[in-house]
Image 1 (cartoon, rainbow, N blue to C red):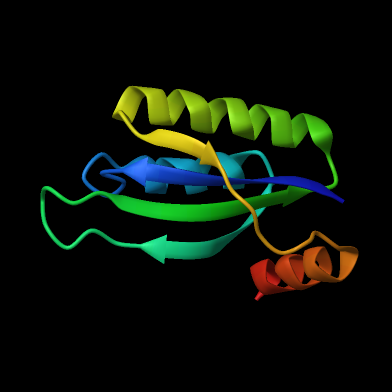
Image 2 (cartoon, rainbow, N blue to C red; image 1 turned 90 degrees about the horizontal axis):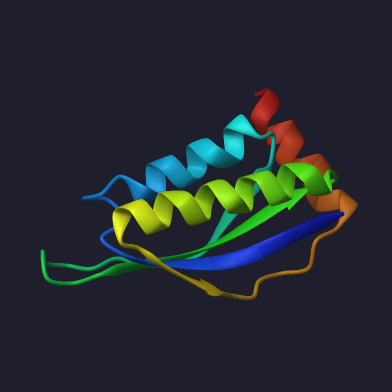
Length: 101
């Protein structure tokens, strides 16, 4: 099990950066979970979200991370490293089961 955890900071909804990030995960077969949200409450406030991306396939993770970087660069969203719960096979089985329903 492999993965990475990142925090996106900026106008995630106005720019569609969050939606595009989730789409990049789905398109590459990478499971994800939102670890933490801090939603801005005005047009001047930024939103931050920590996302954990998980896969058994390193190439899928690399491709997804590059796509997220491209999306964030285009949208003016900052990416920082973040932390989250450990990855394990039990989690991946649960995430996969949730996608089947």
